[in-house]
Amino acid sequence: MLQALSRAPKEMKGSDSIKLTFDQREKSRLRSTTLGGIEIGVQLKVGTLLCHGDKLLLNDGSVIEVHAADEALYEVRADSLPALARIAYHIGNRHVPLQVNDDHLLMLPDHVLKAMVEGLGARVTSVTRAFQPESGAYGHSHVHHSHDDQGHGGRIHDGLAPRSQDR
Image 1 (cartoon, rainbow, N blue to C red):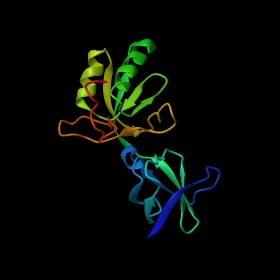
Image 2: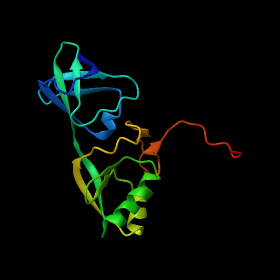
Image 3: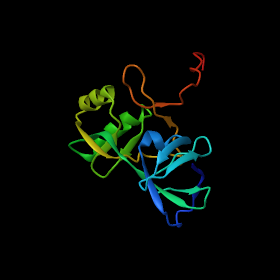
Image 4: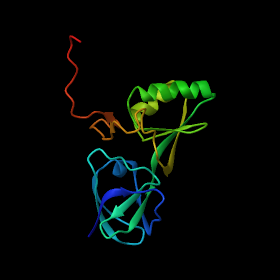
């Protein structure tokens, strides 16, 4: 099996491509099959977040383009841009992946967040689209997307000890 051990420069032309969901693009180790039918292993530096348009350099010298796959999402709309900004602020406080567009937001399905944003006046619609959330203020994601038993979406810094009460 061919291995992708690093990103390729953006200017290199890809000979094939893979479609990955956001959850898959957050993993530094995975197996995938290209659109051309080639099985590849991806072994990148831990913490690497792949984005739509990134390219992977395979150990045979070929280049594979990464595309965001369509996935189930919630489209969030509001009556005004200030209302949408307020909703984005409240979603951001939950540290979940969020794609900000000109007139709407996209987020992974989460019934608790859906109820919250609807309570803030948003209209939420289930859609299927490619998802490329904001990467964060420092240029990389701190979100570790996972689902707990209650169906809640992404959480930040999974596995860190809780804060001390006397801070």
